[in-house]
Figure (cartoon, rainbow, N blue to C red):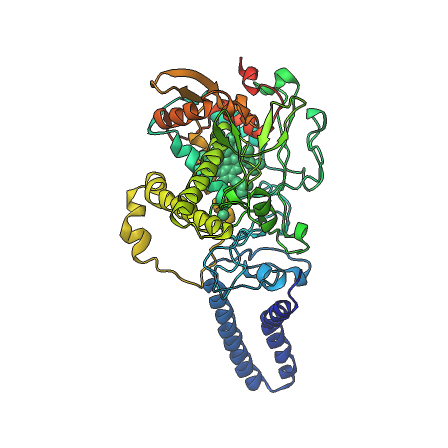
Length: 493
Ligand code: HEM
Ligand SMILES: [Ca+2]
């Protein structure tokens, strides 16, 4: 839905920007008919005015900390998106807010009364630096001679193959797991395949926009050549175009609410939220198995009905055992809080119990992230009270959206601390099982067998993590990039 009023405002400011230079150019033309001194004075005057106006424009642009692209060769000026603000001017839906409401909305709208759409789900990641597409709009970057950049797999093999060393970290595996959990709270870049298989027969590189980033695997690849695989699936993401908002250069959309608000547990829109709520006692729907509480099941990943997937607020809840465990853990935590609140407040409605519990859980996630996770990841100097809180007073003019750079680059760096294996540890603190992380991707049902849930949690708690280093875990690397069916680890046997 396009907001006409906002669109008009944008058009006005857009034209003003565009016309300032143009009008001055034109205005100088009639002056050519005058005598030379007048001409020189006028030209100097014009240059001064233009310089002044340009500095005003520059100041205006610089002042906006989120310039999207100064280099774009934008063909359709109506769709110009040089700055992050353009989405909000051109395409943002109108939302109505009830500011007397104490609770966060499910999609993150209404957090900021002046800009109620900021940080809400299905709005763009903001850019901190310019976009650099080879055509200024959407085409992948090329090397300086205009040729495609080398294959990412080729580089990976050259830089990392056989360089992985298992260096234990002093932090346990929960550090990694917390990171992924928070990543899924603030960032969900939806892929744009339209059901297309970007690596048909594992060999053909795709050519459509969605598939153009498919990774070419050299024929002498040390791993894939054994399986005659020369194409690695890698899909480009959805942009504002998928949401009827044709901005240029490409502007990518975050499906999650950008705030740390537990949206990966509860959902980032009212529809998902309502599918997950029991509407009794403020709780989330759960299933009891062997006296243990788990997330509801959404579907099955094969014809085997024992191989179910979990339903949660985020589509990636089943990606690996650790994240599936966290989704179950937070479902239990929410329901526990709701249960306790109900005992203390017997007259509270389901809605009140749900929202208060959700508020509590969201605050806990923020608290752990800022007091325990970030000091380890960023170091104490960057997370001292005076740095993190001292000068950082709430500023309603800052767009709080997740940035493209954070989601696509910075926060993914922590993929390098993903361990190869998880340990299952029983109540006597004996390791009873060790599993490869990659053997259980999109197969979370292992959690529900026997005491596996408790044992994996104990394992994450008591097993050293992988030290951050300039390489990735070999098992994880191959699995994350290919999603090959079957037992990935066997490739390395
Ligand atoms: C076993 C653990 C993990 C697995 C299997 C995993 C796997 C993946 C995969 C497959 C993607 C999508 C890649 C793409 O197509 O672009 C992804 C994205 C991402 N991962 Fe991980 N990851 C794990 C842990 C982590 C951790 C520990 C962090 C950070 C602390 C993290 C941060 C991210 C972020 C920020 C994204 C982009 C999310 C988006 O916007 O869609 N991941 N991860
Ligand atoms: Ca969120």
